[in-house]
Image: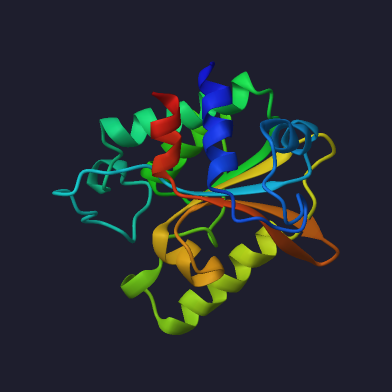
Length: 198
């Protein structure tokens, strides 16, 4: 079985079922069909980083050398997801990330293209005020709401505090924009992609 089909089979196995696929467990075909035709927003946390490395200059995002970087596992995981999407012909249109290099690199490995930096897609947490965290949470939720360009899916790569505050789980998530909002369609643990790629 190809990496893409293994990854999608894993996705099916751990879906938190949402409105787009109904209450029954979907088949791989049920997952492939809507993702292939586009119309979804896919939100990821950046890949794994070096646990003994800290960002020492977080206010100067162009100072990449002093940021926490992806480790080999983080790069391999992001590449596996990107390979699975390409193998399954899942089209990625717009691609957004924070300006931190670990998110930039993850977005590039998954989406296969340069991403657009979004100031509202950022790490947050204890480094900013509660008011700024709340504002960024609402901004991320607003970024998920617009429908992607026709025939594509939108990719957003952000950070754990941003995802937790906006959606309550630090997982790979698929949303379907609906009107001025969105519906959660699927939620999968990040590590499932690596397992599926093996």
